Image 1: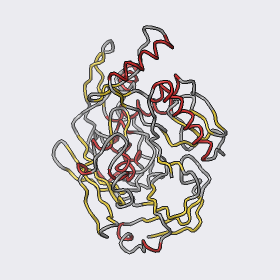
Image 2: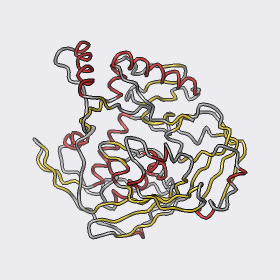
Image 3: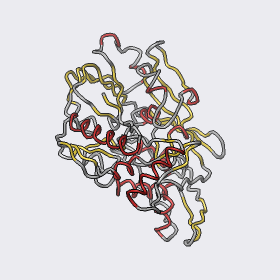
Length: 384
């Protein structure tokens, strides 16, 4: 079914809560609606939007916003150790993460609580706590607007990188993703050494209790994963923690830990408008990193340790750390604010912030970081 709304208010359809409109909003609930859609008659350009969680509308949109509300799910066994789950593009991504954890399936648990929908996960290559969507995506189905046909896209052809893919570059506007297939594992494979996950589990001081993972929100997720889909059991992994001993972990335990970390640092988009992490974390050369260390020790003392992660031949430096070091934690510009608990996030603090408020604060941060550390931060959030 296709639903159309002219001159549509988008303030409730983007998590930044920008008060903007589009000329036409179209919602599609089935694949078969795409071939018969009169694309040429739609106000141009056409923007495919999921949950609106990684967008900053800078003004009213003159074209068509197309929302893929395809919400089916299908599960298939690949082998004794793996199985695949295909989700429609409109499935709430965190509902999928919750379901996988409740079924004892490993793979997406580190991506828990990332806002948005399944289709966007394949476009953005969403990531958190050492895991990216590309690590579990095994197939993508899409409508090719150029060739006017459905295609199955190999993830290996998508040029996935840090928060990017061909869908955001040379393929931009060509493909409309209708479904994504994820390959999940029944074999325990906890990934704990990023962003304090191991520490959060260790601080619990006890073996996590099986079954603590909350079930999917069937209302929000439109009943996508009913009980009749079966169960994979709860295979647990024995992990050594120095000083604490061995913890027996299931995917739901890691999901719970990550939800706790995220809720402590990040605002709930339902309560405070934001687009999540606003800036990408830069990767610099080792020589550049040493210059950053020298600057940091001038400010904080000779033994100060700069947080960082090894990435191939380079060093990833947390943008949040640099923003805080430049004094922007809690800084405001009009109704926009650098979030007090996590400087990587810019929030609509007043609830009435304008796009110009957000952009002005963004530019202030970029200029300060460039002056102090010689790094140009790039927004992760897409500006429309």
